[in-house]
Amino acid sequence: MSAITWTGTSTNLFNDSLSWDSPPYFDTTETLVVDTAASIVAVGANSEGDEVLIVNNAGARLRLTGAVNPALFLTSATIAAGTLDLAIAGTLDLGLNGAGTLLLGASGHVVVGSGANAMIMSDGAGKSVIDGSGAFDLAGGTLIVSSDVSVAGTDTTQFNIGTNGVLEFDGAVNGGTVVFGGKNGVLFLNTLQPGAFAGGIAIQGLFGTNKLEVGAGSVVSAIANGTTSATVTIVNGGTETLTLTGDYSSLTGSQTGQFFSFNVCYAAGTSILTDAGEVAVETLRAGDTVMTVVDGRLVPQTVKWMGNRRVDLARHPKPETAAPVRILTGALGDNLPHRDLVVSPDHALFIDGKLFPAKLLVNDMTIVQDLEAASVVYYHVELDQHAILVAEGVEAESYLDTGNRDFFANAGLATRLHPEFTIDEHLKCWEAHACAPLAVAPELVKPVWQRFVDCAEALGFSAPVYETTEDAAIHMLVDGKVLRPLSATDRTVSFMLPATAKSIRLVSRAIRPSALTPWRDDPRTLGVAIRSVTLRDRAGESVMGADHPALRDGWHAPETAADGSLWRWSTGNGELPIELDGPCAVQIALGGTTSYIVDRVAA
Image (tube, rainbow, N blue to C red):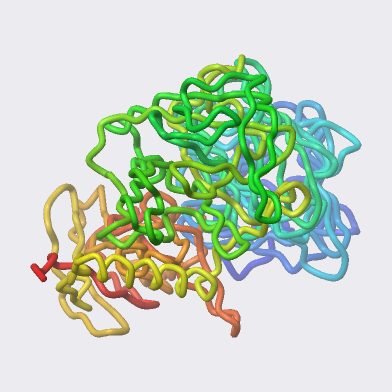
């Protein structure tokens, strides 16, 4: 195969025949045609936006390379047969003018190499389209399909995510297939558009360390688990369903995209009021009669189903999401409960006409979460409809099916390995089928939390006092060794990285907000918030924004202020995906820190 090289600079036009050592074909409409089995290399490609790109030969490879950040804006592109190889070591904007189309033939490929970040975007009015039956191959690189580009449903475009590949959809996906073919791959559904996945997309091979993530604004409500197929329902201005095939045990969620929307449970030994008096929850069976509270009256209802599950907390990756909450005798008032009541963290108690998750009422005195428990056995009581049961004298909810039966060992489905017992007020089933409103807003929860704090102190308990600091103790961990900052203010922190640095992590103190404000429903562990990372080396200066797609390991989803500015919280140990070509100065613009617990002070 012969090679043709683009010899221009980043300021030359991509379609200028004088920029090629042996020019490919150009016609009078400024069309670049690659119709021979040639390897065509472009370094620092640039274009103004009125070009047409055509690759017609299965042996042809149009390769963009170099360490610059090129822009290639086209009226349209057709890879009928052959390969468009995006092998740049920076960020490429591949733009389509107006309503342009990137069309892949059956043997057409777009390859995103390791270290490359490519964004397909629209440069003008109207939405652009990706169509055809060819394939995108993410060979370790990142591909972002922006919100102004949609994936058409007329053909089945395939997106192959290889090892360390990242695919992000910000717009509508009306067809196609995503195939995970390696490890550590990520599919990020970051759209906020209603109906974005209404056309359907198939996802295959989601197993091991591969991940499916959902960005802020999209809430995943249910997964019907199985060994060969599954459906994921996204509530996002409407109800949309994705179909998965294969082993999908590694589903994860972002801070607002919760994959494990799971209702809540009673621990074994809890007494439930029945028509024959109080009985242990584990002795209940389908067909038994329990007493429910309706408008202040006791009304008998029949048990429809009993779910049960033993949770190994010692091996759970997030034990705080499943560890039981213990409500001590008298914690909620006179003889309420009349014995210690133990429930999962999101089990809702019926108080003042609303349902309050137990975890939001924790006060570390009379209501505590047992994070030292090695395991726990949970039971769910399902009736014909969501209702209020009486557990140890306390009014608390029955099971509300949100599509989560696979978390139970006796549901007749493949069981979720590490269930997260969480609750989601955005699920439509809460509005349609819940017996009472769910209260998670801080302004609703804090007065009730304070009431039980007052009860605890009246019983002789002392509220815990914590020594806190505003110092985040920011430093880097470079190849396992601590690197202190050269300078630090409340706005920036600066480091100098050695040329040999490979593994680079931003490390700081961290805290779960619930440790100091348990009435706030924020399950994250927060380190520091950043707005940008600026790198200065011999090649010049580059900036990684808070919304950079490579900020994943040890980072929460980016957040947006009213003025449009962005920041992103770390977990206290966030990877900085920096590839060095010599010594590098790093300046991190901070978006904020918080109060961190140093130690608990004896009262």
